[in-house]
Image (cartoon, rainbow, N blue to C red; front, side, top):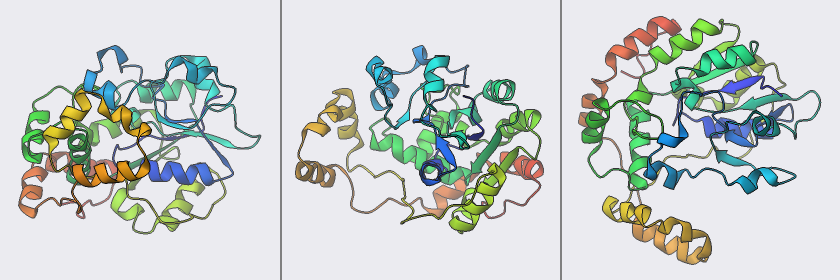
Length: 306
């Protein structure tokens, strides 16, 4: 039960929206865990920070005891039999797919996927690195993981070793060229497709049709409005951090919807915070060299980012 399709990132570049489209396509069987991270064998779950575990807790053992697995967003599956179960709902003729964004970051995943799924189709969506980092920062601030400004946290992450589940990786996950090189070493152009987020979602139905053709599945219509999964901005990052530390978020499911709505208004701003043009220019300096290298790898101009 090895996948035919891998959507491997980048993180915060629309993979959740595309996974939703996959789940609606009758020719695709999407894994029951959207991001099982099975082939990222260099990720050590024992080194995850307590904060990371708080916002992304591991699935309980009871999850695997069910006759039919529920769809969940993420886990770090290490057992081969568990991984196979993620596709047991597949019908004959369906392509098997999963969407682990850690694979693009991982130093091992490309080689592991090639070994097990040599003919797998690899899809990558790359977003303006500043916008990707900004979106990632806003998510971390929403959960109270950071309290500094965007530029302060970007500089701090720039000076920190990249560790999945421990460092924030605002900077590291926005560096694309080295990761792309790893995948290009193992998968030829007919098996590897790179799309640009800003172009892809500008004409979503056309882009979806094109990627379906690449995967070898019939096209399907995109229903409804495309959801924006950008994070909300907290009124007080310190208060959100306190909620995280006290694990008060677990109480959310016990509260009535109207109480949840009230707390949402208390904790978060009504309007999304925008990155100023000045801060955008300052942040771009971290990525300009990588963008230039990326242009040579993909063989196209990325002036829409710069």
